[in-house]
Length: 109
Ligand SMILES: [Zn+2]
Image (cartoon, rainbow, N blue to C red; front, side, top):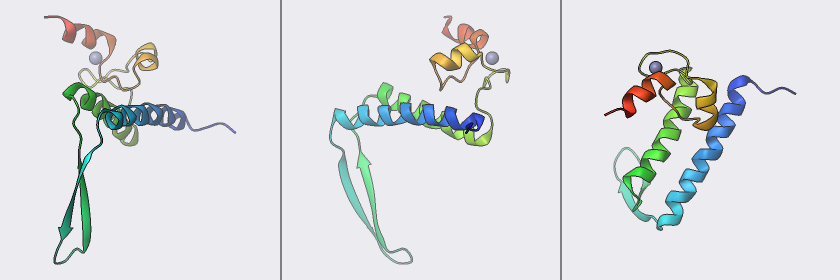
């Protein structure tokens, strides 16, 4: 039974996402604040604070953004020039947002 094309990409991204979440979780137990709602809404909202580095959170964010792009149908497109991102780039970095050319330009001083 063949999977839809985006299905396996999503699966791969979700694996990366869960690894990133695990990294964040291992770092330090989150501090959970329970905020009680009053009025129209009832129940509580749990807000968790993670003591993580900007880099670790950035990694997590890149993966979740890639999943959003997958839903929007813009996954695999360079966010700068709108060309297709080379498949070898996506194979190595599934959450890549730039094609090789634009990525090169960005890394230059
Ligand atoms: Zn580009």
